Length: 94
Image (cartoon, rainbow, N blue to C red; front, top):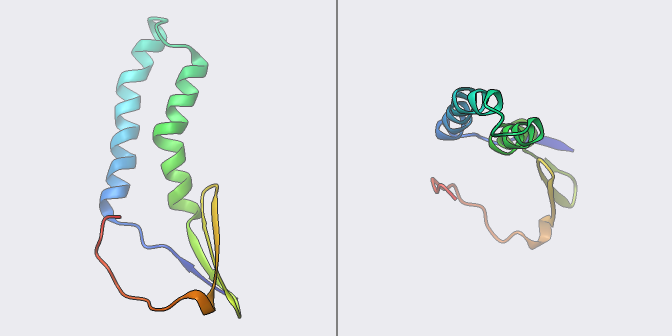
């Protein structure tokens, strides 16, 4: 089995860092003013920072003798190599 890490574009890292800075500036005053609960803070932090970070850290591709296995955070796909018709490089944001 061969494992390949996913290439992560610079803008995705920037989005995660920007979200972290945003949360660090906005959330503490709201918690201090009691307009936001601690649970809401934790859920917001995970949604904005934790989930994208989980995707960055865990995304990889495993190639076995007959399958391509893709893992990204909680998502998993398995594709039979015989079903792949072509592979082409792309610069798409999608």
